[in-house]
Image (cartoon, rainbow over all chains, first blue to last red; front, top):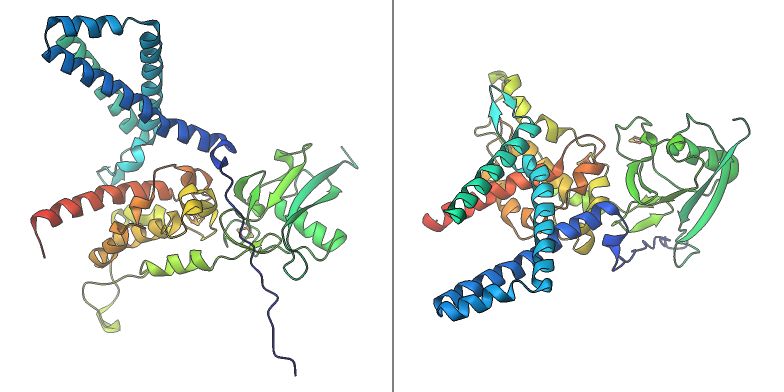
Length: 133
Length: 245
Ligand code: SF4
Ligand code: FES
């Protein structure tokens, strides 16, 4: 009798490098992750400003002027857009990381999302007050 | 709309004769009540008996019929031709799993992971039969019910790019199943299972893409189970820093 031989030959598909472009859901996720690059650059510019401030008035003025360059303005508008995109998509996901039970019932997702927006609005107002006074 | 037809592209792979999968197109009569699974059964009965695919319950309960439909992981019995007609449909075996044959994938890794998380109640103390059952209130049950609804279809693994990049990742369904037991009031095995949660291939393998929860046909929301565990795991880590064993 012939020994039993298997015809099995599982086929492993390769993950295409552009996998995240194949589906809008993945693309949106990648943009959300990518926003961190803009935020990092923004933070570096801000830190640079602090350094210039510590170096005296002239250095500080130079930094302020550099910010008025069209490229600097364009970058900041872009960074703001991306930061908002990150915030909105992140708030949408927030209920998944919250496990709040009231009277034996799970708190509804939209309550958690709303609470985040309220916190966001309050923090923005507080920041604006600090900056203007 | 009598006599209309619909074209279905199917990624085929027959290990005994093919070196790589290829696409075969089938044209079948269109019926707006026909599910993708029924379309496959029509093809197998009337057109090409060599086509292989898995199914059992035909009603989104057994979890056997997962496949990629136009690139999206879905249950064949819960997707209908009418939602794609008159366009051509593309069926492929579930992504991120090796192909065994045609639409059948090798799920061994998935099953191993489900088994690895100690998917059984570990009571604080073993009771004898005479002592009766482990009682639970509806409120206590509500805490884990959602995570117990999984039908092990594997759609969430096909949706997960982290699993695609590294199959060591414990993955959505297994971690949701782990949550199902850790959240059960009758269970006292949480500490044992947290070792799996905290491991590198545990919840920290997740970057919160969130597509697993989107494709889950049972509303299990594995992404939520994982994010909640990240909170737990971080707490565990902090406590561990101050309280060395
Ligand atoms: S969690 Fe949902 S998608 Fe994943 S195996 Fe279970 S039922 Fe399927
Ligand atoms: S055949 Fe059972 S889930 Fe589709």
